[in-house]
Image 1 (cartoon, rainbow, N blue to C red):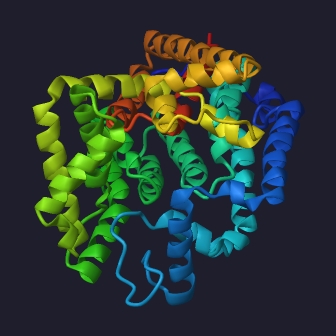
Image 2: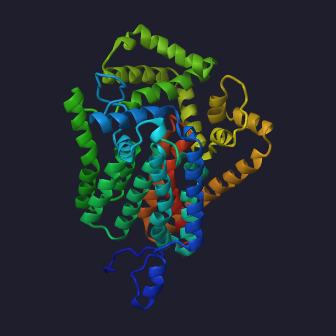
Image 3: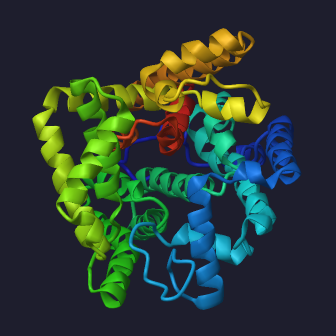
Length: 448
């Protein structure tokens, strides 16, 4: 190791006398491999029994995009001609579906199989990095926290972006860890390119890459390479959209998200009306302003954003409260509604149950009253989550104490950035991008 470079805890240069032992640490223990194979093989097998369980409302839109890519070579969510270009969703997951042959609800088997395989391979991806941070015990706990998180597993077989994004994003985080061990120009390029690929699945990857740049600024050449590599693919997508639509945009998701979540919830909380009624009131304003007559998706998104910002300014305390509780919902959400669907258990018949379950918590109490046996699952999962959060805190503290402040800051600031950006929606599935950072923090908590 070069003189003056900070030594990683438990990440030492290989000792020739211990090379045989070091080789064995590259792979997880057999029992962990078999457990991952059983879990993800089981998820795949159960999915084949009823493919409909893998389809959510957004899934059908992804399948239309996939079908148009595969058969018409156009990125469009229209079902009939003319096929207008899509500016809302990003292209990589529909491309993955098209390559997998998933273009209709009956042709998703291969896509589900590949997604479950990616979940299984996560164990092998994170193991060597977890081992170097926290030894065998740290690697086991880190791998378990990432690969066997209940919410993450429940999304693995769904025709949604989470499974593919988790694997690509985790690979980018692993390359970032390797960069912190041995900073190099090639390492910056590699991490940046994979972050850029992840950014064509979910926009959140760009913000995390920004955190990576911030903690790498001491080596400005590497930081510049990281910026160029990360933004290369997203900028190509912006240029593509500019050519085919006349709008140099990355995505128009932001406007709809702001109007549906913080603006609607802030209005509902301050006025006492239901969430549905608050959304209806905002939609009525948009209709009055003629937004429904617009054909341009960028103009529509701009109108959504303008009204959302105005509404949040009129209800600032309610907006702040909703976003703060959104962070809590991300960290503490247990996917209870998905568990009910999988176990085919009845749900309360109240009209706003879904929002009560995901936002207010009253739905959770009602469900546990109807199905007391679920209390055990809920309690076990909460212990799993909050135990992981405690270990993550210990791990980042240990890294900072042992001279790895850049790595510690990267893990901690990435978690904070994802929470800050996602809290305005506040659903438990937005915890999934946190898992790689939490897992490596958990692993580091067992380091010497």
